[in-house]
Amino acid sequence: MSSSPVGFFDSGIGGISLWMTVNEILPSENTVYLSDSRNCPYGNKPIEYLNEICIKNTEFLISKGCKTIVVACNTATTNSISLLRENFDVPFIGIEPAIKPAALNSVSGKIGILATKGTLSSTLFSQTSTSYLDEVELIKKDGDGLVELIEKGIFDGRVLNNLLIKYLKPMIDFGVDQIVLGCTHYPFIKPLIKKIVKDINVIDCNEAVALQLKNILEINKLINSRTSNNSNHTFFNSSPDNSTINKILENKYEIFNFES
Ligand code: DGL
Image 1 (spheres, rainbow, N blue to C red):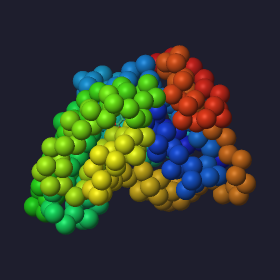
Image 2 (cartoon, rainbow, N blue to C red):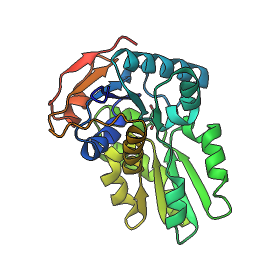
Image 3 (cartoon, protein in one colour):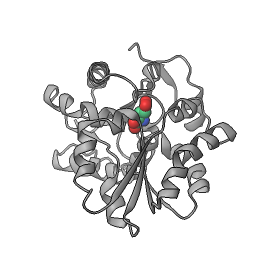
Image 4 (cartoon, protein in one colour):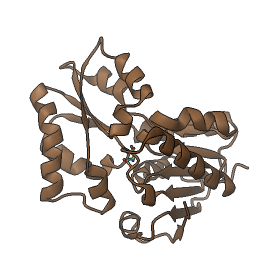
């Protein structure tokens, strides 16, 4: 059982940013990654549809023998993880916007959050963010259009730069000293975001989630105790276009088709 893979899913390549961090922290773990690019973006889907997709993705990963599931998507986590936990026995690890570390780090008392419409409108996000409102002021921006560009493998250039300025300038003008990346696609454009916001601290919580996964695997005695580093990684994509996945993974893995 401990050599069974850890499953990951996202609407596309975004969760690979988290998968990469997990690989660094847990190099012995075998993994299965499901890129549901056909249904991308998740951020503008009605919650009922999102729930249905998340159930299908989980069923697929469990059919591949996954011992635990990383919901490598803020939108899916904030809207659907409780439903997944009610319906399946495997442990789930989700990812949510890192408001707590941003609030703790902030000196100006103002933080910005860039996330999808689906994450920002979720009950879970609203509960978490409300609990920090005594300590910090929050400016939220829906990064409409960013995920679509990133899925095309666009990580810099004029179009992306202009869109980012539209979302980040109001945060800069508001006086934030922390910006939370509340979508797993955004770490791929962090260098461009940093270029625009300069000294403002840009936070994602990939490392914290990877450490939490380690902790959950240890608690459940599911950690792969094998010491060699030749772990096995399998990728599935629900769209026939694998170009951006291959670009990120430097053509190191075969990508299989997933009929969603
Ligand atoms: N990467 C996802 C997230 O963290 C989903 C983005 C989308 O498909 O809209 O929210």
